[in-house]
Length: 343
Image (cartoon, rainbow, N blue to C red):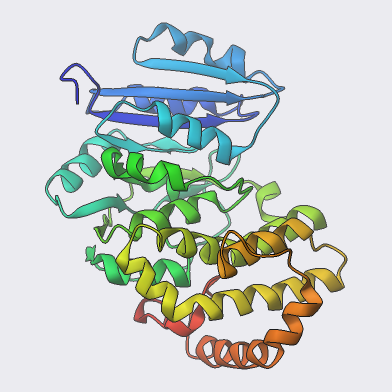
């Protein structure tokens, strides 16, 4: 790494975030650690985002990029990851706020643990106006350090990582970027964390609350089509991420051997529900088929897959219900893994 390069890259995809971006940028400027670059990508905003960013463009540490039309958070995040120069990176939301010690304290912890790929932590939840949010996230009892094998298993059970809280090592992320290809709409962060966990490096938990995460009422509800995409991705992301990670990771390959069929059958069960509601997209079937059968698989028919996996889908569903019954936290992935964190 060039000695003149910033130590930390702060990556911010922004779409119609005019009311909040200035507060985030000011919180970045107020950091106790100042060796950073800020890369902000205005992802085709149609509000006053560009005008609100103009004053920060005069700060040489801030680099403001724009494209149009809007391409989504997955494309924006991928582009920023490809441009970062820092040895470490973080990814606050455009409407979040960092406490002054965020960079310094996350950085100190990660630098002291060379066998860890990233550190994450809790957030203070705020509403659109910046007051306390009337919404609580379930509290999970994370160990301060989770070995890579367990971290991958836990992430296959649920996305436990709040993206805004993360600081990660850039060199490992750069190695993973060629595998970060699918155009996910809502769960791209889960896919990325699964790839990171597959490296076998450890996952650190910092119990200090070092940022504010803004919860919007509109983010808690959505129209049926958007909700369908979320429901589909919750099942597709762990299936596709583990299939992809098995190409470069012996750890992921072992988990793929164990959970490949379970992941696919969980997806098929979800696909049936979406089909009954008239919301199933054919591209989702083919994406899942390529993950399960391989890239050269034939075009997938839901009816054919149900004939092949029907009894197995029933057994998988029964095992999932049994596992869920013993857990206090509702997971989105494979409940059968049954890590004690969720019990």
